[in-house]
Structure formats: C-alpha cells, structure tokens
Length: 294
Length: 294
Image 1 (cartoon, chains in turn brown, purple):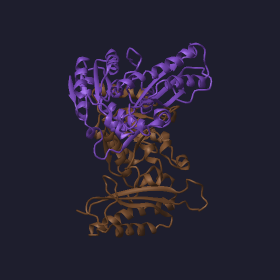
Image 2 (cartoon, chains in turn brown, blue; image 1 turned 135 degrees about the vertical axis):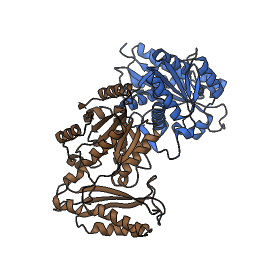
Image 3 (tube, chains in turn brown, blue; image 1 turned 180 degrees about the vertical axis):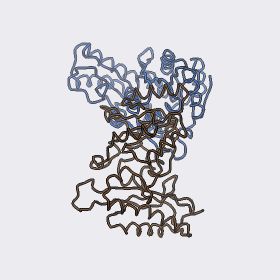
Image 4 (cartoon, rainbow over the protein chains, first blue to last red; image 1 turned 90 degrees about the vertical axis):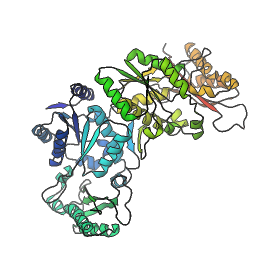
C-alpha cells in the first residue's frame, strides 16, 4: 500500500493505472475509519481493480471551528485498517496541497444544498462539493463510493457530478449499524457512555416511523410526532431537524405520503454537564426512506 | 470533420483518442468565429494531435438578456471556417444538454471574479467558469486555448483549473487585431460604420499609455487621464471602466507603477440614434500589459 500526499503524483499514478486498463475506485473519507468506511472499501473492490482511499479532514465543510477541532484524528489506526482491507493507495494531502495560497474556487449545488443539513450548517455543502470535486479530479477514479447515511451529501454529490459532466460513477452504499441499531459514524467516538446509550433514539425513531407506515399511517405530521416522541425519551437528545422530504429533489413531502419519502434526522447529544466546553454536544444524523406503497 | 451534440458521445470520442495516445486540444467558443478564433485553432494545432472547437452561446454568462439576444449567430459560416481550418471535431451541444432539467451546480472563482468585468457584469464570470468546467469535463482535452483579449477571463479560468486540480493545460494566445488596431471580437459585427471607426479609440488609448510608459511616465493617475482623454475623442464612446491592475492577482496597481501592470479597458459604443433599442450599445474590451521596467 502506497501513501501519496501530492496531487501531481496521484494524478500520474491514476494516468498509469488507466493506461494499463485498470478500473479505479475512490473512497473519500475524513479518516477516523470504522466498519462503515470499510464497507465502502468492500463495495469499491467489487466494482474496480484498484481501491484508493483518500483521508482528508476538510476544513471548509465545518461551519463550526470547535467541531473541526474536535473531529477525531486516528491516522495510525486508519493506515492499519486500510492495509488490512487491501487498499492500494491512500491519498492523504496536506491542507496546503488542497487549498494552496490564493485558492479561490468553490463548487456549489445551489438548491439541493439548502434544506436539512444545509440549513443547519451554513456553507457545509459548498465545502463538501468543492473538496469532492478537487479529490475526484486529483485521483481520476472511474467510480467513487459514498455512504447512504449522509443521504443529502450523496444526493448533492450525484447532482454535482451529473451537472459538471464529471465522468465518474457515484455509488451509494447502505448504512452500517452497530448490533443495537446505532448508525456508524466517526462522531460516535465522541459520545460518553450515557450519550452513546441515548443515541439509540435516532434509529428507534426511524424504526417507529417505518413501523407506523407499514401499519398504514400516511399522515406526515403524525409520523413526525411519533419521531419527536421517541427522541424526547432521551433527556440528552435535542432535535436539530426531523423532516419528510422527496428522496430525489429533497422538496418537502406532501401532507399525506404517497411515494417513497425520506425521513431525515439530525439530533444533538448533549454532554453530561451543562457547562461543558464548545464542541461538547455531538450532532448525529440518520435517515430512512419510507415506502408507503409497499 | 465531425459535429457532436451529445456529452456521452463526445466523452467516448475523447476516451478513444486518449487511449490511442493522441493529444487533444479544445478551443471553446461562442461561435461567430473570426480570425482571432482561428489563431486559437492554430495555437492548438501546434500543441496537439487533434483540435476540437466547441460552439455554445452560454446563456448563464450574459447578465443582460438583450445582449444574449443580440449576440451574433453564424452557424453555417462557423462550420465552414472550422472545416477550412482543419478542425477535427465541433462540439455543439444544445442548451438542454449543458443545462438539463434540475441543473443546480455552479463553479465560482470568488475574488478574481470581482473587479473589472466582474463588477460591470454581475454573475458573468460565474457563468463562464461553470460552463468552461462543464465543457472541459465533457471533452477531456489535454489543453485548452483562450484569447488574451479576455484577460480577466483567462486569469479566472487558469485559477479555476489550478484550484480544482483539473488536469488541463490552459494556453493564452495573443490578441489578433485588424490592420488599424481594433481587437477582433464577435461583437464588432454589431458596430455600424461610424461606431466601427470610433471603436479605434480603445487600441489608441492603450498605445498612448504604452508610449507614455516608454517615455518614463510611472504615475498611474496620469496614465489613466491619458486613456480617458483618448477615449473622449470619440463622441459615441462611453467608458465602462479603465483600470490599472496587477496582472496576476488583479489587485489595484500602486499609485506609481513598478512592475508589469495590466491596463484594462471596457468601452460602450453607442448607436447612432439615442432612442435605439436596448442592446444597441456595443460593449468592447481591450487590454495591454504595461512594462515599466523595460
């Protein structure tokens, strides 16, 4: 496994692999790798001859400096995990390589970036689409794999890739969960034991909504009430948003659900003491596509 | 010569040319081809095995709908000129191909797009960088050639390509002029005979400034006064801007010129009658890099 830090070098390596007729897959990450990332690596390997992982904690997608500061960095174990998973290249540029002096260009998906996490985290998706465009153009993969846990991110990236004519296939891979249902996230590392326990309300709320839809519930507001009740059971959980949206356009779902509908959740888990430092609350997201027609 | 209208088709053609080891050059145009464009084709041919020209009047870079409406369309003679010039492929997509339903992504170079034409034409460079990114990613050239007449456009595109890690060499080609000095522009087609005559004040003003610098003048304000006097000789010419800027950063030049300095001009040529319809005034640009150290 080779670690490459330089854009020119990774482009030359991509050109050589392509010239040799090999199919390249990229798994873009911010490190702090867990089994969810490794499932993306597996999905990549099924579809390509070479699997590359990028590790870059992108400063421009953090709306909150404290959140950037607190984001977990686990470089040595990340490398070890990539080695074990049979990754061929880790692309790990410095910030000064991705944002050199005078860096002045942004890529933005205007409408799809507005609701949900875009409303809660101003500038977040502009940072995401800008860095993903830079990473895809640096590594020149045939395909790139993203997790469905970040549903809106995946939708925004698909739209960007289509709109810009980027000749890269975007693959969405299913969310990986702990045995008790918690969606894997690098941010889970920041939960204390009690917050970890209470974080289960996200998947439980999704289960409750899904169960209600299976039982015939079609009223959006009643489904959201169920979700809010479930989350209210956890005293340290605070809803950032809980919304029903069209899975393709992210437009608000109609009052009565007819077609497949995204239920998207963002919830803060507060630290034990109210006087905890900034960055103490951990924001988790999860989602489910409800299928009222099933 | 092949005319391709479809993105998938042009990408497949690019892949085949690249697989065969051929070097591709793109000359992006909005049609209404003149000898200036053909000089870009020549510059492309010197550097590549295949020369492709794109012809697309990009709606998103026109801040004024009347200007878009009035922009010259000369499709048949454009094709003929490309054929004669030995162009291999003309990529001429429909607007619905470049901006399909739900198109939502913009590429923007924030600071470099602000002054000069960016200040005079809000949103113009965002339209330019968005369409140039889409065209480069559709046609996958090794290099692309742009004219130095559009100095800021060239600077903005170079910055975008660098920032996004687009693996395309950007070549700037010298401005081509009529025998009397007028810079070639598709917009010259819209000048009546008297406006055409008066349009000479642009190149004369640049000559006057250059002459003054050669004679030792270093004071920026006095150079701009010279420029304004020269343009005032043409009663139908109205200055949009006349500015001295750093050629790399486009920051304002210091009061006394020390290093190479961009003198950038935008001038409206008014139609004969004051009651002429909107789009009647023709906006021309020209520039010169002054070399006080020579």
